[in-house]
Length: 322
Image 1 (cartoon, rainbow, N blue to C red):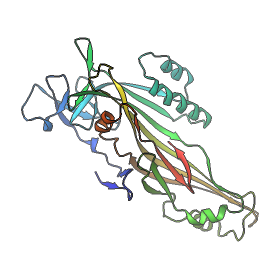
Image 2: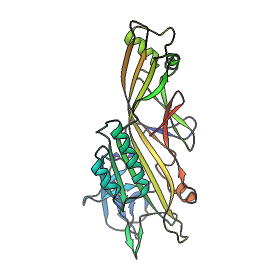
Image 3: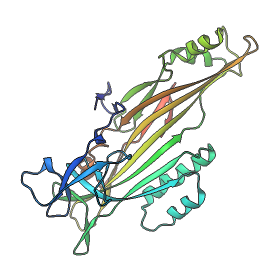
Image 4: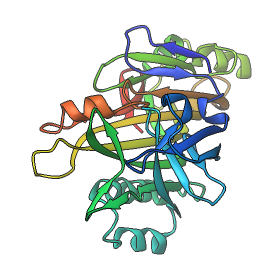
């Protein structure tokens, strides 16, 4: 895996290959946790091979048990639930399920509304609910410094922002002249990394000129530049029980986003009758908020005021949250 730290230190960008492409060998410890064999000194019990699935950081044992990577050398047994976000009946069924947390229901509801609004029938949600191991009436999942923890994860595939105005009116061409990249940020660290809006790294206006052979000399009121982004977004909620008798409490929400495709549409009137230029750019770049891969520490420190890392992108200082 190639890992690059953003220049201001917050959002991380990964190459297309991910660390979960290789099988891992795990074993059960005395608390019923699946532990990476490289993380223990002595063999604790029978070993199992966990193979990667198509869902990032999710592994499968031979008996079909699914394990979610915690980032601590341990793996959380989970149940997988998949729904189409444009299928109202499936969404309503999930929202009425009392075992699903309000956090997941909230993002499913808003994600479904956006998918239906954008007529995006490809948008899919996959959620992973921790199964846990019931010991004396209390469920344990995985531990961090003796604290009991668990994660809930929602994967959204093929989501779209819908068409967003990047610039419009007489000054639209000036904005298009300046931008060749989009910026990905997270609200916690405020840091950024970039992705190319066009495959040849040219600015939007250069692309317009290459395709039409014309450049705007002055702007018009009906000029515009719009963008639409297709992406996968993974949101993780991490809970901790610090032993105060109040049970599990939410400590953090972190995110990872894979930007798949950027669509651009530009129009500048008055030149050869005005022309609309549409372009498609395959991005395939992954961005992680600082604590997504291993959120346990920040979650334990933040149970009184949950830590939130939401990832968004912007062009021309217009933020769009994933």
